[in-house]
Image (cartoon, rainbow, N blue to C red):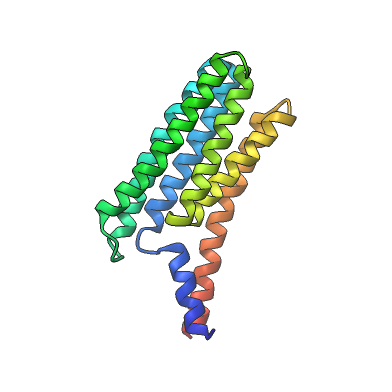
Length: 186
């Protein structure tokens, strides 16, 4: 692979045309995730309801980012909507199933919240294969947060710190990619 192909691959990773908007959506999704952890900490009952709503919110945001990306590709937006809607509706179906299992008494509210958080993490990671690395990173953040919640009593600070580290990491990644691209153009 020559230097130009490497630079093109890096360009594809960050999508500079809409990177700022996609970065803003990424940060909003992380903040919504952190808010969900706060809600879950205060009310286990409201926590899994919040995560159920977040499946819909993440689905809508995914479709929006896909729409932005469709403007620079040959994929029809209608095809993207069908694929995204299918992915997120199936995720919602499984999240509702987890809710029903909790209602049967097989899971505590805390366990149900963690299961739903892990399902949202998996769905976001898988969607990241279509949309881009930032969605995959959000999925890893959600999965990591579920593990932190399970093991750390004061999990809000740990999850918040992890979220800040992830956001800073994405900005540093963009800075590195731009520097790498500029060095290769010389």
